[in-house]
Length: 157
Image (cartoon, rainbow, N blue to C red; front, top):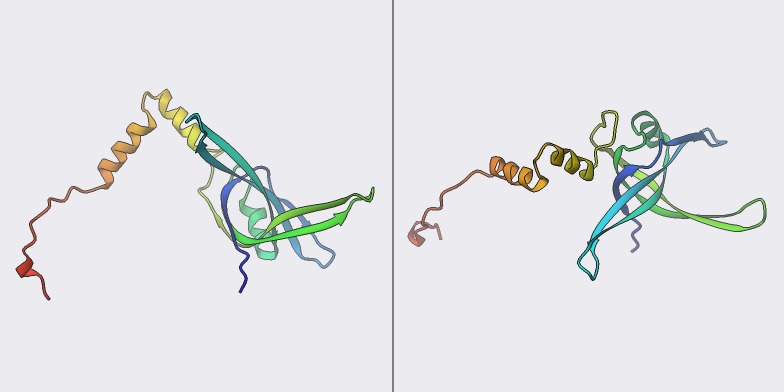
């Protein structure tokens, strides 16, 4: 049994490029950036960005064309595929792409991209740290439930 499945959640680096194949099939190509945060050996927070080549066909290409633009958040489910070719100078090239099998749109952006870093900066401008915001949100979301003692005799066995 074999499995070739990829999930990528990130932001588009540019608007999708749309074209038609000679067969008439619609194709959308775009790149998605994902970030990974980690701490190095000096306990300094680091950020590593990966760029993924995405290819969508037919209905997924139409959806990409209609709803996605640079900065849009998108969840891609697909499979890896590597293409090999020779350029006009005879140099062998290859490219690994994610072929879309499913696509979910992220929150709609209003004019500009809202990243966690940008939201944190905006909160700092207002004098509210992101940690304080999270604590306040947790207080609102989690109801306080008083614990009551459980009597073993009351349990149905």
